[in-house]
Image 1 (tube, rainbow, N blue to C red):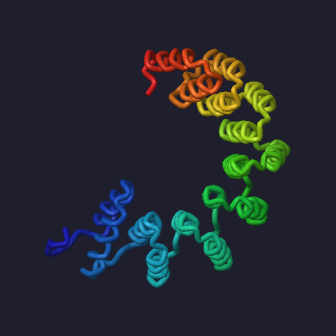
Image 2: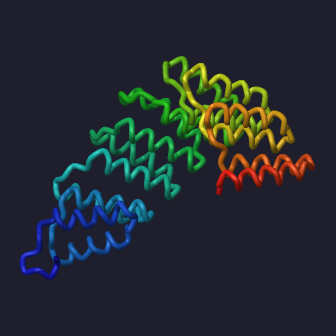
Image 3: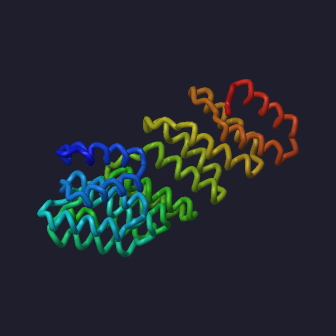
Length: 287
């Protein structure tokens, strides 16, 4: 295409860059973009947005910001998706303070973020161990006209539970219910995991039972989390009861479930039952 006497429009080149970006071939996309620049082929807003996405995916934030500056120099206006991508790139690189400053600067210049942006930001903060900062964002967003949703709450609850701050997680859970935000299976799975971490197995089993009246169906991960916690404490009987409920509701055990059971049996010196579980796993073609 570049060697043609009259190269195609930037739209055709952008389609190629977009396909590369979708398949995570970020270095190739950036290299081809640089070839376009060298040939004097002017990019459009879509081209530049794709390049920013590639830069962020590679953690090349300096280059991402130089492309953003080019967007402004060409009198384009970046959209919310592009700005959100830069935010996500910053926190994935561990530059949380820079992400917060970028967020504030963008708002100061009259740009708006949406619910997806804040969900992405909160999730990223939690994944990088900045749960307190995520809670601060959750508290701030109503002033921007954004309503917190179940994804935001669930991300923070999951992070708190992993840090064994289970009481704080349940405080947010109660806040969700008070605001009319319905918890989902991810919320419950995180809370059950947290309860198991702090040894509150009865409460974890009760919480599992609470899901059905709320029309929330536990999935294989939910059951497996509880079974794993019970097995690690040698509570094999309780684990088998949970397994019975699981199969009764048509949820098939996976490799994680079986591994937890075998681990539990070995822990209480019931090796024959562990072998039987292994054979059952093989018969059911679980791998």
